[in-house]
Image (cartoon, rainbow, N blue to C red):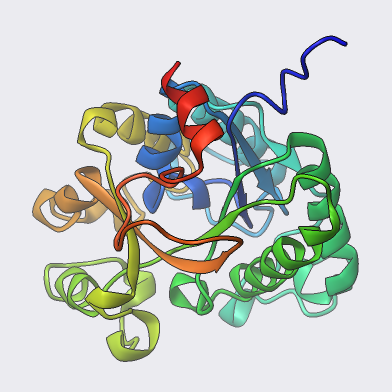
Amino acid sequence: MKPDPIRNRPSLLAVFAHPDDEAFRCGGTLARYAAQGVRVTLACTTRGEAGKITDPALGEVEDIGILREAELRDACRHLGIDEPVFLGYRDSGRGERLRKDDPLASINADPIEMEARILEVIERVRPQVMLTFDPHGIYGHPDHLAVHRAATAAFHSAGRFPDPPRRLFYTAQTFEEMQRLQTEGGLGVLAGLEPPTYGVSEDTIAARIDVAEFAARKRAGLRAHRSQTGPLSTLGTMPEAATAPLYARETFSLGGSRGPIPNWPLEDFFEGLEFAHEAASA
């Protein structure tokens, strides 16, 4: 019998809502594992159709979804990860731009159907580790909350598979980090949000991943999302001091585990998963 290349290769599945969600909070981690030989798959529920163009040099954009899909493919190349998988929903927008009447918007999706689409990806790429949004979706975006729910449910439902995912991690920011970003001219999406609600305590951080070596790849991945990180974006106007720590390490909380966690916090998602760790190092 021929060896199964998927079964013998460590695999990480990241599930997010929009092009660019993968870059700022965990782009360095995705690049790091791809460089180590891990199969890194990004599933994106939408093409970011409700995004705002923040680079005037792009001019009038007829179809934002097509543009943002191309930007995500470019970002994945910079990060060194596989081509993205799109799950076929539409960006719901938020606030006054919330697309309540769009039947294909992810806020109107059947959550069991969304879970099923994620399960199809899990069955195909067989991840030992999954990654998605925290329970508050970083800043409460309705699409982020929908993806959190569906990916978490899929992790648990995948227990029926022969090789289910072993660990589920959430992107996480500490109270202190969120306060610093707000104080130092931080992200507009964080303005007015309460750190005790949207952040976590230090002892909730389950993994701290050193990504300093991959800062250039992360920056390139972010720059690929030109429509969202242009000079009119909050990221485009943030002082370097506010974002510098996010190019050094990325932090995550634990959403679920099938088996023990050998250390707290982990410095490696795959630590203790012997065959995956050995395969990644081979």
